[in-house]
Image (cartoon, rainbow, N blue to C red; front, side):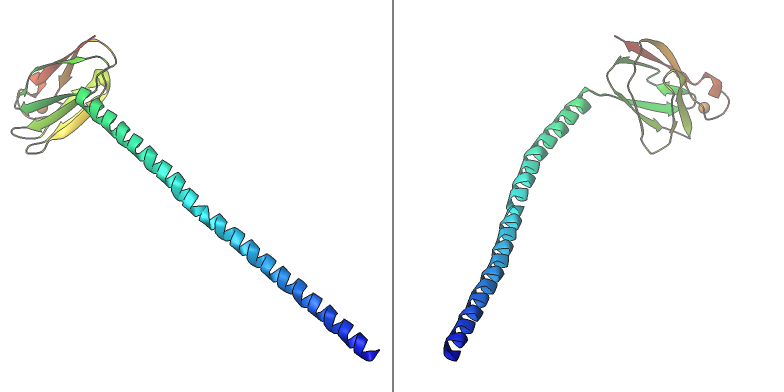
Amino acid sequence: MKRILALILIALAEVALVAASLFLTGCGANNTEQKPASASAPSTTNSSSTANNSSPSAADTKASQNAASVKETVIRLTAKRFEYSPSQITVKKGTPVVIELISKDRLHGFNLPDFKIRSDAKPNEVTRVRFVPDKTGTFTFACDVYCGDGHEDMTGTLVVTD
Ligand SMILES: [Cu+2]
């Protein structure tokens, strides 16, 4: 009878071991389930590949930005005592304008109060001013850095057309 009890105990111990090993492999199975979850990291690389798909569209927006920069009106405006060249600029309403300011002699200013634009015009250095004219008309820009006798006459005209 003692042998039978011992066998039963051994059997129980084996069952417990099997149950424990099942539990452990169950945990292992959980781990391997987590690895497929980390294998869903490839799915995040899929989503990053969709991010790659969106980066071509970002390249598209860059292209459209390039197209927008093509639509920009770029004007080189030279300042010198006591005039701007050209003295009259004509741009289109709604089209971005980039004015590239440069001085031929000393520091001047570029002040376009109707569009709340002002900038320095420095010698040997291009200063860019960008704005979008949102109204039509004829507007005056002027030097706002005192540059000598005649500074007050240093003005130009911006014409914005439809
Ligand atoms: Cu001036």
